[in-house]
Length: 112
DNA sequence: TATTTGACCAAGA
DNA sequence: ATCTTGGCCAAAT
Image (cartoon, rainbow, N blue to C red; front, top):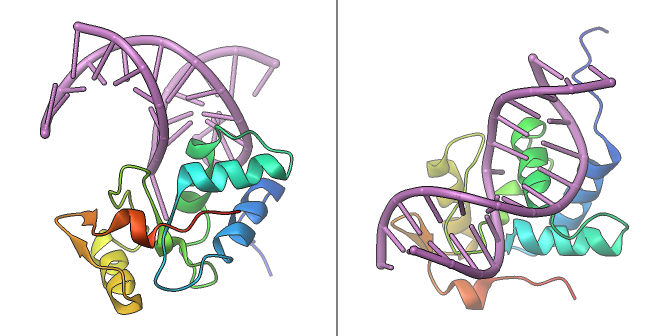
């Protein structure tokens, strides 16, 4: 085999692990993930790096990155296209209107 | 090794 | 309410 796509770093791995903990019908934010990472020894302000980890590597179904949105309730981005993200979220029960998550405060999942 | 970038966030004007 | 600025972090080039 060749051309093995770049190995996942520990940081990315940690991000995916945390995202995996978000149940369907809920969404989380990059900031929350960063905070959760802070407990694991990373910086709590790594929100950017978190988003970066999502966007670079795994558009894969392996990780439900579609459950991650901005802290302001906006969608943020998605490798497969925001439409895809909206569709997936809507399927799980999270309504998105005009690029903004409705009832954001209610569906926002916080890591405890 | 240094610079740039990015799916951010909070605060200021 | 919208736009701009600064900060902060990790990966990519």
